[in-house]
Amino acid sequence: MDPVFIWIIAAVILGVAELFTGTLVLAMVAGGAALAGIAAALGAPFWLQAVLFGVGSIASIFGLRPFLKEALESDRGGEKLRPYGAKAMEGAPARVLETVDLTGGLVEIAGDNWTAYPLEPDQVLEPGDSVTVVEIKGATVIVWKQT
Image (cartoon, one colour):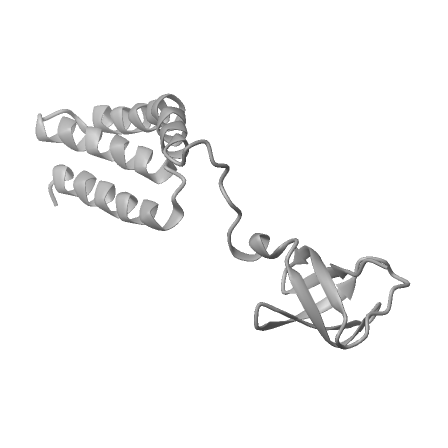
């Protein structure tokens, strides 16, 4: 297979993978692959293609990525990025479904049931109590009820 196509395929795969990560790192490496593809199209030897791939990727990660990241974040009007996924639940209200004590229990957060442990080891939370999610640890939450 022609090296030009290999570099182009690598650049496309990395670009598509970037859509799922959103870190801009894979996009920068895809740029390095595109640079190597251009060199291959111009007839450069493979060692030069590999050097251009490495140098282009590293230069864009450390030179271009910070500016792009800042520009994307400034499009939000200075708004800080909000957490997403499990981190977004920290600070959320929850309702105790089954007694939560040192051995565990069950709480409901936004319609989902989670295994929960109290923040303070001596605290026992009864069904119906309103609590606050303090931390997410894997598939469990640490909750706290102000007394």
